[in-house]
Image (cartoon, rainbow, N blue to C red; front, side, top):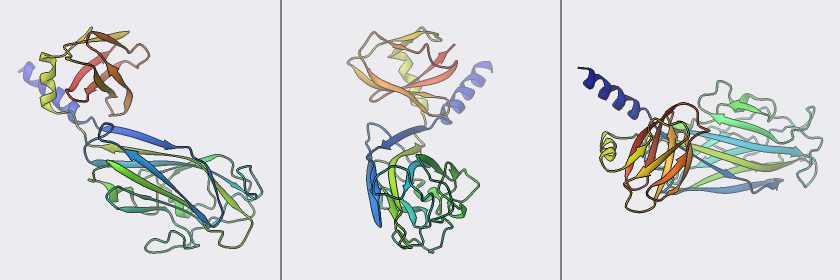
Length: 273
């Protein structure tokens, strides 16, 4: 009975693990009645499974000149942000009044041009987990906001391919304001659960010592293998390429359960103590 209980607990734990992969674009651009279009590519070597969650970090500076130096204009109602998946699904994250990236239905958000301090390198996080709508904010600023349309529209899709992020400044009132796009980070979580078949790896590939506090050594590989290391929440901790009988250092990891996933060989559980 004890063995059955342990196996059930282990399988339950494994089924909770999802994979999360982040991509960041740092190609800054000044916007004035224009759109910055950025492509974030996810390959099959980086991610698999179907989408369960999307989050976006967006960093902007609002300025009164053509560069990215801060200026007098802090906020306005002509910023628009949208994200399109490789499957063609488009989600309007921030809705604009100017009409550059009008969604359905169009709304007037309350971003204003004057009367607020400059916005310098502010990062807004857009997540379905937020409680405050981005559309309801009186200025662009740091915080976590619920997107205009839910990211759940992407759920169930395959994430592999080109994701298109568009950030627009409509200059809707003719004020000499500019938006400086600085960077964006897209986080995609998928349901790449570690399956029961992965447990068979322990008969062919060995990790020792396990549990370990400093390092683990891998044996049983026929050739060098790409690997990803995930924590119990499914967050990718590290990755790399390892030959047979080589070590992976884990001394800086927090104590707990981790999963070592090989690109072509499946997944092994390890414990850091």
